[in-house]
Length: 226
Image (cartoon, rainbow, N blue to C red; front, side, top):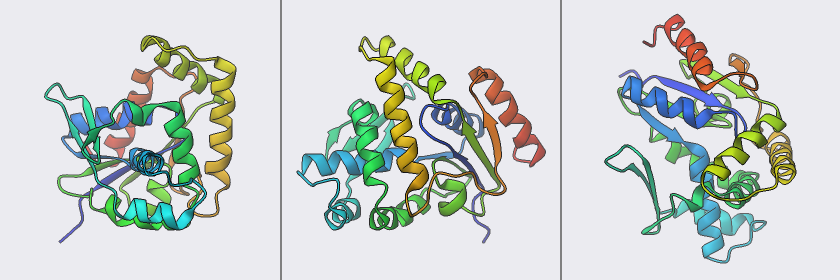
């Protein structure tokens, strides 16, 4: 039996991966994997259990026993439940993303989550969002896309998102956090953040969401995926 097709979309935070993957999953009627949310869930669970983010074995235990559920509200909005508690908002906070980046450097944690990510690959297909989807988790993906953007552009986007939520943030601080997270992701020993050799790179710095989707749709058509 042939495996379900996969579209792997990788890249750092703030480049538009979530927007693209959510739109594609709706358009195609495929499943969606937000691998970053898995690492964020591990980080949140570790903090709640008073596990240090530099204790690899303890973090592996957290990842191996992770009780997290991803679903949607009736309106189609994301809902994430961790250990029986809804954490949809908390999991998207900057400090959670920063903690997740620290958790993700540990090889044992990454190994503990591999099979869980593979389980998302079900018919009719999967849109996989992350940092190593095309390089490690689904190296046989039917299409690999690597989204990128300048740190300044990504900080501006995040600043705008926070402002819409009524939350104040200092733009310079956001940019420093993004650059620090990028360094950790790009230099970790296992599954560093790099484009797959056969990935198509799209720089979203100067592109609107509609323009990015137009490029993605062109790639889907060229690969016979729509």
